[in-house]
Length: 595
Image 1: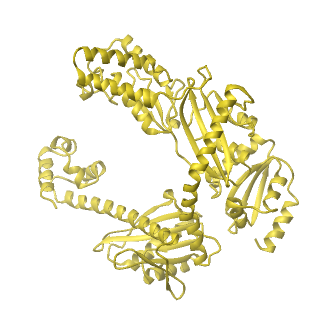
Image 2: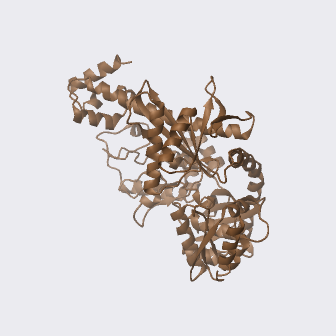
Image 3: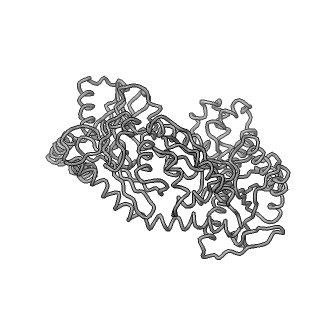
């Protein structure tokens, strides 16, 4: 941080009031890189610019050149505003809120004849009487549970009613609701037992299986008896969860956290019907105080398609009131008794997880963040947060495409990947490079998109010159380098400078593996798109060769099947839904001889 920036920040700090609010840290490009909240803004903001800092906080501070703040009326308002600002600006240092993974629930549908389903996106669900059970952080456990119940209870399996019973009916896993009338009592009895099981009471299911196992054994049906025994073992070993001492049926989520080595480790226990149904863990780098990061994490946790429990228990070191006001659910910090023991158990698990995972995290950071920092130093760059890489692919000038992948702070950002179908359909690598660079960065300027710090092209000096020429015409001062491959098509050197020179990289270094990983990723992504386009193009040309397939039928076939392989797999009856029988036969005959 230079003297001018320090002076500017010092002047602004003198004007900040000690009131609750949110603040946004900005870098030299005036991009918001971090959003935080504070009970007392002046104290919190001043703490960033005095004393010494380590880890992620030190890296954040090294990039700050300015800040803004918004005063609010209460801590709860500041938490709401903070989360909204993070969603709006997606700051790179608010890492923990980028985990958009949602856990599945098991749903027993409210249809006249219900089905068991695994659902993730709860925001699509409507209605107050939804029968949802979970969450299941382990999706395999959710699938196994649904499969188990579907084997024991012959519920409907099909989404729509068929005109005749399907395979499930013939193997005894469905009562044939499409053609048979089933007594309402039988249906309600099945639902009642399934709900009891999903709420944690497996006694009815265990009794049912034990009784059936004995009956089959007495009939000398040993194979069936063995199958039932295996199901019983699965329930006893896998599905019987750890019981806790709270003897009520209230749904609770128990949070614990532990900090060390610059990381915050969090454990969540999902307690349903006095049993720990599942658990969730997270590990995040610390920037603010641990209790502040923890509160933010819990607040965001329930935005990700989670159903709020009746009660949440958290450690006494965190502010229960602010979470209770924000989530509008009972949040408590027990001081003693059984609930305190369970919170302590969550804290202990968080501690164990931190020490178990720390070495893995450290090695991963050496391969990503440290390698990215090494590349920044090698290229003499001030910052290197976002890298965009390009690769081109064509087949003798046909099906010309390009792919772009993005790495942020050493890791791939797959939501930012882009595909380009090149308009100039001829074998011209330089023309392709000019077109894709112009299209990408004209769009960046036009729509105000985030600019990269570095562009890497998968090619030699010619491709680098083409990219630089286009960027110069657009008045975009973005550094461009290239990755050279050897005769074995593996990464050999970095091309950089003006004039362009080769920089040899130690093949055993993390930086070499990092560059190789990026080059492999952009190549894989582009080749995948090229195959997709080529397959579709081949299918279009095949369909143009068949008499009786005009523009309308061709469009329907392309939309439904996409590739030659998929059409080959269809029967004449399937194709007759779009084509006349004779045309379908001719198409399949042509494809059988097609190479």
